Length: 442
Ligand SMILES: Nc1ncnc2c1ncn2[C@@H]1O[C@H](COP(=O)(O)OP(=O)(O)OP(=O)(O)O)[C@@H](O)[C@H]1O
Image (tube, rainbow, N blue to C red; front, side):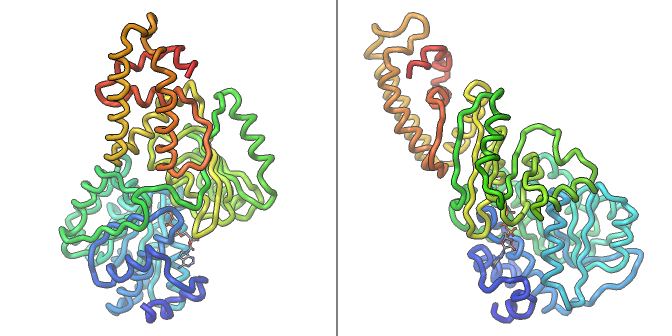
């Protein structure tokens, strides 16, 4: 490892020691094993795959590639967004400085001719978004027969419905070496179980799965807050948050909709990101898609203007801050009218992962059921929920506290109604969802 560390411009990149995910992944990759690695956002996963791949290529005596109509790279790295592949490419360039290995980046939204020109100049490591990659392969500018390393960054996103089909196409190209003849590496901060099952189809049967820290968990260096804000007041609240942010920090606002950063022309996207990185424009508005993987120094705040729809999305969004040992703050706006089910959904998703929590929830449900039965005569005529609400209230707060602890939330302003709906939505208890206005009295 020392040899690897000194040999590849590590010091120039400013890295004096390995981060945990790097410490565990690098020897596995150097040993030629397939790998699925899960570590929290901002923990240095890019270096964890770049460094050993480059080291192996050097050890194998890779020859620098020169101008050719069709290039045959030894390594292909795919990631979901243009900004992210570019970021990986820039990191690769740092390590490759002074070596004969030539990295190239290609992505949609730019002239295809420009990508072809870049590729034809020589290409050992290709960083690409899936659409542009398949396009260039179809045009026979990239041959796959020499691919020894296939890396999927943000692998859970690369295998989900959006990109999964493209990934299948890529690995089933007749010229693509089969999985036992290439090394496949997958990295992400989140790996839902269904994606883990899918991923194993791409990896050799003896692949290793490295999990650093709490599997799929939010970054522990991010202080998380949930603020109850009515939809109509979100704008004012955002201004308040902006005003409370120091001059030197950058703030990322994440929306659920589509009108944002992503709808701009590629050139405008690059300028917006550059202005944000440099601090010229200290606020960037983006969607979850754009927020994944971006590594920008000094982002101290993330505001979830709208709640995300999945725990994974939440983890990636807030992971734009608190990177690489720094601390950060994430504020999520929660509208108790429109977001109540979404929040419940998020918590239930998390519960499904933690069977003990589900059991706890079910036991609370049982105690509710017993209580209702023994107090049947006292039930409210309209919705039958009033008599046990005060009892429910204390259970709810204990329960809410547990869930928030589990999610790592330090402080919160969450409507108890959300929790009540949550408890009512647990299997076999859905009939209590009609809690109506009585819940206001909790
Ligand atoms: N060994 C190291 N020492 C110091 N800094 C490092 C080291 N390795 C990586 N970094 C820095 O840590 C930051 C985060 O790294 P990176 O973007 O790879 O995180 P990540 O785990 O891929 O995050 P995400 O899951 O959000 O994509 C980068 O700025 C990178 O330059």
